Image (cartoon, rainbow, N blue to C red; front, side):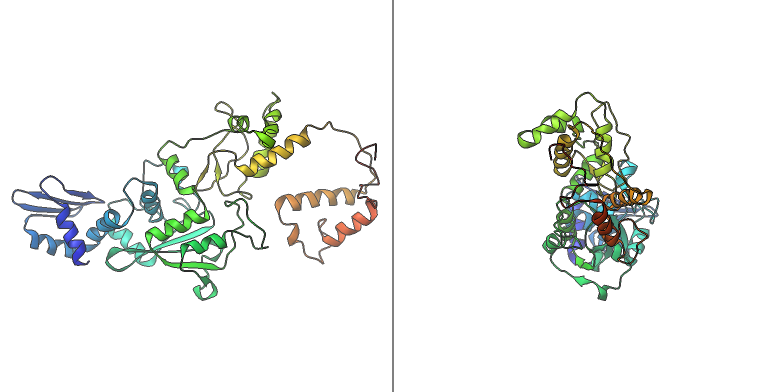
Length: 387
């Protein structure tokens, strides 16, 4: 503990103001200072005595100093997020906001007054997951904190095998493209590339990095914990679409909510987005589709969902027709396998020599050669009779 921290402690305690934080209580009374911990009390201290007792219990004092002079303003989203990273229990917060990788599955939380236990854990590092980010916080000198962020897939990787970055803004480039160098329009898609590490971040820097990779997630997570997450449901979101997206309003034609269930299952499953869907059809109609178990909430259908819904609105406006094809049972199953593989995003994982898999590229090419004509019509049957 340095002199600045001791001076801050003494300055913070006056006749009018005292300190009461995480089990540390310091007051100034007529006969001197009172310094109290859960299992210790010293009274009648002059300033020199106060400094001596504070040095002997430095973890309590440095903990107070960090959360009051280094961390963001108490009660803010950033402050609560840093407490979340450090696994400080917040019994008033909804369980679901504690998130995946949280209390029930990976490690424990610490009561606010369990400062020595939390400091012991910080010596070895306390970890949390936030989407695909693996965030570790450790103690630095004089009770300051240092944070490290890497991909969850690299949680156990040797640091020498990862590429180090020093500036949080460099995360913008990492998050821009997936492992196949394709642009990631949905920042919360589970397609963040691995192989990198941001060591030695300050509290301000780790917040900047998290908000760069997953914009607005900390703010919405905090609003939910405060009970004021402003959710816009499907119906109201679609109702305000205009221009080329105004067509989606025609999809709600009093035909129930099955179409929205399909949208939610297709777009909002954990395999597609790491947010936890909180929006429903409307205030009175909850969707049966699983909303996921992500750490941070989704408060409204995103622009990707709206854009996809625009396309489906046009497609679903068509009348069904009957086509007649001839397929062998294996060919029918192969088409089903191709749809499954593409929908699950793993068509590219099919090995070239695995000819048992219906989505094998050579098998697909063979099927095309056999069942599609030169114009790409399945079974030689045109989509439109006029063709």
